[in-house]
Length: 76
Image (cartoon, rainbow, N blue to C red; front, side, top):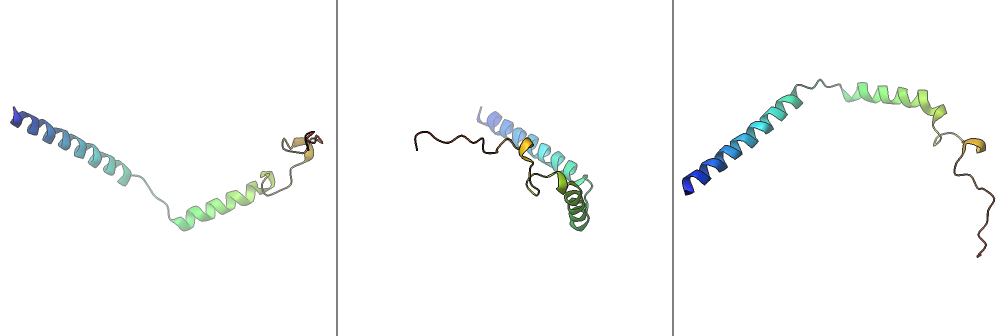
């Protein structure tokens, strides 16, 4: 009985290792780009979209959901 348990544990470990190897093979097959190319693409994208970014430009009051509505706290 002890031998069967040890064998099933080995089979389970073998199965898990096989899954890990398959995952590593998939990850190794992914095409990669150089960081310098990706950073240039990211900088260009940010420059193109900066006029639409509310964090970089001012939001018109008509479109600003966070604007002060003129209400004050009655308790203070």
